[in-house]
Image (tube, rainbow over all chains, first blue to last red):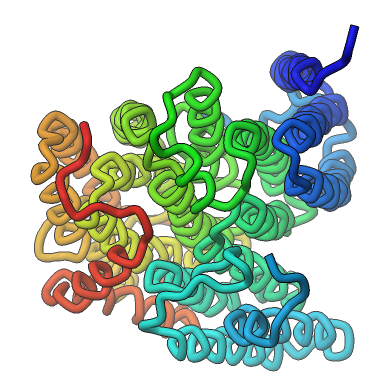
Length: 101
Length: 490
């Protein structure tokens, strides 16, 4: 069987869905963050597959930007999570209850 | 497509370069003279002022530069002015707040300038990649700013929530963008618009519209993507909340208009239906949830959600008049919203946090001038004449009636009536004279006085003489490509 760009878009959709479900059901902040990274990587696969399909390189350039932003976000995000951990000694979002309705 | 850059590309991003230079200088100064808060404040304000001058030097141009990546037009200029004005007012009201909280000023101002830089690119980007980088420049700065009170659990929690939901919404937005790229083979808005014209609407395109709409919905805090807003607004340092609710919202609306009006006119029917629904639930849920709040910042968060709902009416209308009235509303909103948050910031002193409604008791007696300013801002937020808020709403609703969106206007007017209740409740609290431990007058420093003065002046003057803003917004809206002056499609 030949692997076509369409197969990659299906893979990307599956990864994206797994990422969204992960964000919604997991309670550990770090794991939620990993699920978000999974979503971004689904986007990357989609972009590369589409770049192959439409035969230009813009999609691959886009991927480089997404990777760079994801790295910057990881740096900032882990810093924030660390600051949170120092005060609360937990990374469970059910413990985030200082503010409520 | 010619390779390489020309010097012209750098010429047209002069305002952004000035801002970047100022921000870097500030970072340098924050290491060499970390204790000189006055110097840091001065450099920040001079940078913003110089950038504003550079932006106005390009006023009246309508060019596409950097090989189609950036627009130097009236629309971009309008939003750049909004971003810079809100940054300047935020910086002015931050100075005393930073002193009270004992925070480092250098990095704080640096992050404010970085967020402003992102907003400026969101206003002028003509390519999905440029817009997304602008959005992230802004968002990453805000993640740090929201958590700037490191020992404070509320600030920590707000930062974590904002970061997680912001990153989640970015994933959704990017997935939508990747679908758009797949369907059209380009990331330039003009290219997307050209590729889609005359093409059949497919399920993939509708999905892309929904995903991009949802991603932007998070940024403007539209229901049902608003869950982060109350917590983040409450937990963040108050001046950051102010900047978040004005600057970030305005820039996100600029990006939303660019993508949908300029890039996706072929799918106007789909996205207008989407935003119609979002507008209705956003204003209704925002206003109803605001009714029961006892925390002032939290109430203002819901009120700002409701205002996003009103602003979406302009997107639904989508004509030149609709967009122009949105710009007017954003201009008015800047003054009244920053004014209110300025007062909430000023109430933070010693060991009083001052963001509860009951902290306002007896304000009229304690500080009559501040009380009067608060009264004006509340009347304006509620849309009661003769304030600026009334003019903004009148124009926005007028544009919607013009486009035949009668039901939307009926719902919006009913919502405005509901909102009057909780805005006036704040005024009632200011009249009550109980013996409060917080019964001392509110000290307003010189920078805070300037910020509040400008906000008050804007709120009052635009209510009496809104003509200049109308005309400016009209000319700005007309430069948006793909805008129609006729009645909308629906």
